[in-house]
Amino acid sequence: ERDGHPVRATQRLRAALVAAAAATGTLVIDPWPALLLAAPGIAGQDGWFVDYVHPDLRGHELLADVVLEALADADWCAPRGEWRFDGEPDRAAYRARMGLSEAAQAASLARRGLFALGQSYLDPSSELLAGAADAFARALALDPGCASGHVGQGALHLLRGEREAALAAFARAHRLDPAALDFLRAAHAANPEVAALFARAGLALRDGQVVPDDAR
Image (cartoon, rainbow, N blue to C red):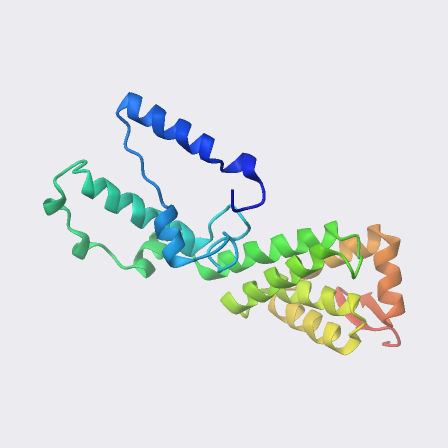
């Protein structure tokens, strides 16, 4: 009821799930109270979700904590008194074991922003651009070395006519990872509107880099 798409999370659906669980003796674990404490308001507004329905890294950790505590409270596997929460590895150790990192999450956010950028059809008034800008900002806050995040910010500067800021962002991206500009090069080659956007800004793509149009 709170995320704008009631078909995804209705009270009727929840009632059906609870009824089915009761009929089969299945344990019901509801993370919503914990999410309300951690991120009050609409899902996605407090940095715990990558969008309005999928948790980010911290959100998944919160869900895991809720599930583990509920299993212990229900004496599953062993009585709660025998659970040894104090002997668990810390979050950093778990992330390392599972190959999770803030850099990976930042890259995911940046990809989401680039997708929204493509959906906007390069319309500076598009609401999608606000979402893309937020995704790039969050990606770079998590990992300042996220090359695709800098590419995205450069593209936004380009749309806004901020030539020098665009050049600086694209240069940072190229220094971090030249391949990050592949998205831009492909769009420039395939879409005349993108090429025209660069031309209007006095920019060009040469040798895999974004340069002033008068560069030789």
